[in-house]
Length: 165
Image 1 (tube, rainbow, N blue to C red):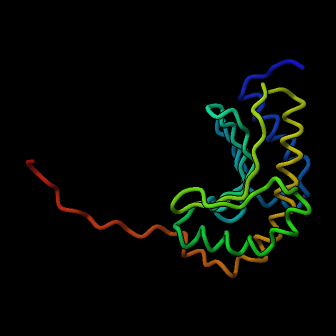
Image 2: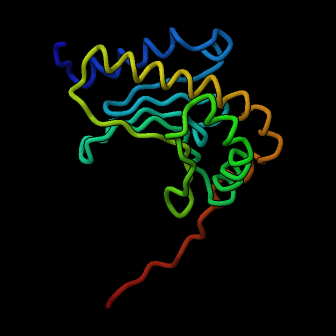
């Protein structure tokens, strides 16, 4: 199988994922490709699905990210944790829910970073579409339990400039 350029690979993953998603999900999502990642979100980009080519660590991540304030991200992780057994039965036991940073959480799996090619793009698209199809109904059901206001960053206080040393 011929090696592809990253942009061509990610476009193929995008196109194939969109073909595989159920119509109602495909028509209600926002999707974007930015060089080494492809994101899909429904209500807020702070809760998004992502395929990320992490070339430095030679892995491809497929995941659901919660990237708001700590209370928001962790509330989502707690809600999702209640569904992990059922979700893993559908998406696979290799998916893990974890604290990612001090304020972000994610449900994800990683695969070896192989040279981009059409067969790998198809495999990634199938996994990604399955993750979205399984998790998005749970996200929709749990939305009332995680107030969107928790995702809003608090305004920063203007500090006084410091001069001298």
